[in-house]
Amino acid sequence: MPSSPELAAPAPAAPGARDVGAALRTWNRRLHYFLGLYFIFFVWLFALTGLLLNHGQWKVAEFWPNRKTSTEERAIRPPAASDQLAAAHDLMRQLGIVGEIQWLATRPAPSRLEFRAGRPGLTFEIQADLQTARAKIQRTELNASGVMNSLHTFTGVRVGDAKNQRDWLLTTIWALAMDAVAVGLAVMVLSGLVLWLALPGKRLGGALALVGGVLVCGWFLLGVRLFSP
Amino acid sequence: MSPRVYAFIRDLHLYVGLFLSPFVLVFAISVVFLVHAWIPGAAAPAEKRTVTDVTLPPDFENLKGREQLAAAHTVLDRLGVHGDISGLRQIPRDRRFVFTVGLPGRESSVDLNVAHHTAAIATRQTGGWDATVYLHKMPGPHNVNVRGNTTFMLVWRWLADATVYLLLFLSLSGVYLWAALKAERRIGLALLAAGAVSFGGIVYALVA
Image (cartoon, rainbow over all chains, first blue to last red):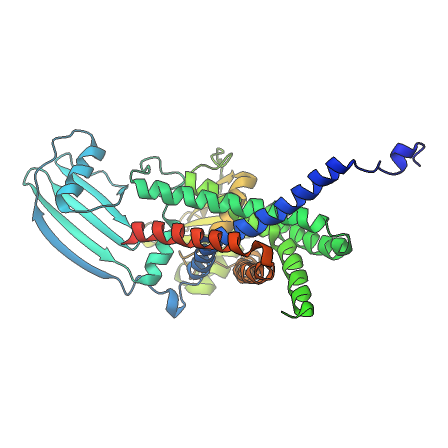
């Protein structure tokens, strides 16, 4: 049992503190709305493409069988640069290709330069023979569903693949946008919790919903592993 | 706007949002790891072991589809390897099978030699952060005919879908709740427009 009036009940806040608390609550509510409104199109894109990626058998999600491919062979000027990345950029400039470079797992012969370059929904596989000064270019174009799916995963890097780094400014901008959406969603979750705590009448129902979510999600995050031998 | 409808949607937005918040955090946190190709603790060394005298179900090499996956789970259970088979490669010439088996935070690779009845197993405890990435990517677009061979993955597939539908509901109901606040309309519209322009601008620059 509290023995002093200070512990029995919090002292009434000074008018200034009340104002600050009210202002923080208002700004927290605004932050929740404003982030949601700003990121709504990003969230829709990632949510819907997430659904499509998990249901590749849906008619609307089909894109690989409907891809358009074409191959051409062109004369090139062998790049002077000894650095592979600079040489690839030189070759792309000659061929009029813009996009992110992806190095393939296989290492070509020294007289060859082979890589993939592209943007969401459009990739070029380039096989250049520096001795004969010829390049074979295979162009693959995806439909709208393929473009959307590519946007979901277009980061320029992959876990465990140190060979590939982001080398196109727009990939970096898109990656930063993905980070911003992720941070924005996390802030919305936290501001939502603060909004809920300010509603005394909704505490029990809200707590049940939150605990339900934490238990279900926590089971998959930790429980499945901990309870598997 | 009817006050009762408004109050009902506001409560539903609150409760759905609270239930969904841990799922949203899992997807949001894993985005940062995926975008930067870096997962703390995921590069843990593998524990390796070899099991001999592995008992195989009859006609194991000739089974196909779901029957093959069910038989593979029988073998994996005997080997003490648990999880969803996310990759299965049969190498008939060597009479070998290579399985990739995953759980959130654990990854195993099993190289089963049918001719010698041996299995080389490598297991890595990839940790909690990697678990968020695993859940983000599963079941995913690859190996559609293989993935989803455990109950937990079937349920997670359903939950991942539910997360999308509920997130769409939250965003639409959020717009409805914001639209009811007359004082916040102008700045809200400005932010909606700014979001549309930045989204459209980046996507256009990337794709066009």
